[in-house]
Amino acid sequence: MIDAFDRLCGTASGPIGIAVSGGSDSLALLVLAHDWAARSGRDLVAFTVDHRLRPEAADEARHVASICGQFRIAHETLVWETPVSKQALARRARHGLMAAALRARGGTRLLLGHTSDDQCETFLMRARQGSTWYGLAGMQSRAMSPVWPEGQGVMIARPILSHSRHELRTYLTARGIVWVDDPSNRNLAYERVRVRALLDGHVDLKTRILACQARLQDVRRLEERLIGRWMADCVAWDGEGSARLNLSGLPRERLERALGLMIQIVGGKETPPRRDAVQPLVARLSGSEAFHGATLGGVLIYRKQGNVVLSAEPGIAGMAADPALAHARFDAMQALYVGDT
Image 1 (tube, helix red, strand yellow):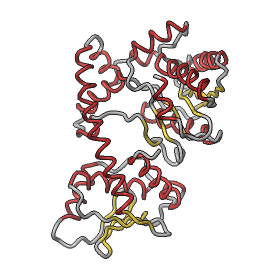
Image 2 (cartoon, rainbow, N blue to C red):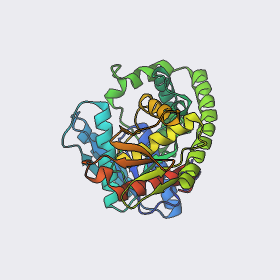
Image 3 (cartoon, one colour):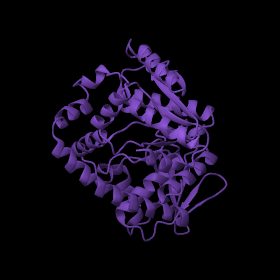
Image 4 (cartoon, helix red, strand yellow):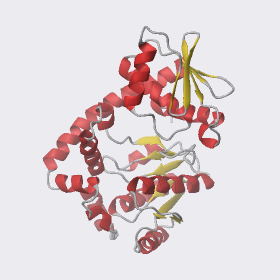
């Protein structure tokens, strides 16, 4: 397991951040990171987020702090001051708090405790939602922070993604470490909990899903490497934050993905525009009729001298659409795709 930390964190600057809730997955990540850091001489800092949605959360944070104390790992409890009982909002708040706290300490890498069980659950959930092969490939071992602009300069890494929850709990038990079971993980109101219950006891199904995902991951890495090379060779920036794209020669699906990514970056958004919004735009750009411009995701899209130019819509201010940050984000994403991070 330790080799994954070298691969995912070896070149990261500053202390390595770890998201630790107190559950088995994140505590196993904490202990494994400690063993790696002791060998490699790296500093760690653990973050526990109290969403203030459950009265037990404060005690769970203190439990994590106690374990961190035993391993002499710096720990910080981060509190969500405006709690809302909605998973998507809680996730965004959690990532925003941890990214800001890590940046304040000079760190650039945040470790998450996702496992192979999480991969299987994600596969089935995305399949139900009609995801393409790209989404069915699942979570990546390394990715940009999902929040913007708080996550600028922060990359997340998942060192235990190939290990099962059972394997990690066996490891913790052998080390004499007690984990916390979040009651929300038994609440069937949440889709992930229902999918988890479906998968429980179906080892063969998990094995088949992971085998399928491994192949899709290979294809996705190749696809992203090609997009990364396109970003390096066919995208030019001016001094005002506009990006000039040469889209000629791109296969249709890659064109849709590359254009959506660039709209996300130029517009300062956390996610690309929906595929069903990008597809009609690509059809217009690829068609024989004259293209007179469009707007999508807070971005102006127009043709100039045979290329497509993207610029943030006038009136969109603040860090989210800041040209310097957009260019820095582009560079980080391009490096991630070609494997230079």
